[in-house]
Length: 426
Image (cartoon, rainbow, N blue to C red; front, side, top):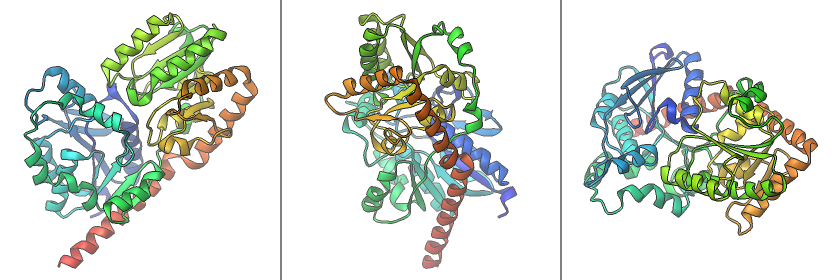
């Protein structure tokens, strides 16, 4: 099949502009590169959080299909929570589309569970290869995070288990023609758990030129942030995993000594209860004038780059983070980084070289993060040095072109594995 007639189908759990995250960025940017190579990338996904079934996002066609969660007794609030994060959905119309889309080169699943099972089954039936990306990690997800994702279904009867078994949901990773990890530490664990070596580390990338320039003064003016404030920025989902509460408490310590400090929290609220708790604590601490909370910025908006250029430091305090694509964006803008030393994020940022890091699970985590913020505030030359080093790191190792070249190699390995398996069975 020639590239010009071949579709690469990306299958994420959801894909909507107003709840954009790292997974969506990876899919969109890889699709741009695949289109330049002559392929026809397309997204097939659920209707989760969406208003329309068909859309084109920066020339990437998106088809969405009705879905449901096979649990009894789910309320509208439960369904919304599942749509936002971690829902184990089922969609027969999506499965039919996987079976009927013409001229498919390869399936690329960006989710597991029943959705991954649908991809696995369609690939088997059509004798096509499939790969799986573990964007959120699998083998090192903290128990408390897994429990939080399962909370909307607690006490509900799950009648979809036989359907998951029929689709081979538990075999998605074992049977995959290749598995992609964004956290290098997961590769060895995945190989051990799965009993095969079809596992590769593939980092995320960044469109450096997009973030290299921005109007920080305009962003501050637009959102009533004083021009002389020391601005700490966090851009990520408002979610317990991202630990904005820990960042807020660390910022409070800084603010007590430096009342000109200002915290900016940007991101969609994937856990509304957590966002409510965050707002309550802002009020209780008397920080309403020192903290700005904004919803997620549209992926194509210039405000995204402007936000990084408005910041004096970018901080990501996540308790669990397989990669941390926003760090690459901050680096591309020359913005110095203070980040948690956890998962792939801990390997991405080199302490004292491309950023300052701390252990988010340590007893003194909030004090350590606050001390790093204070160091950044006191030493502009250090901010400049770390920002410059981060920008060089992004440019040398994390361009989308380089990531796409590695992804194409993985696709070819997946195709070779499928052919070997089919030859053995012939």
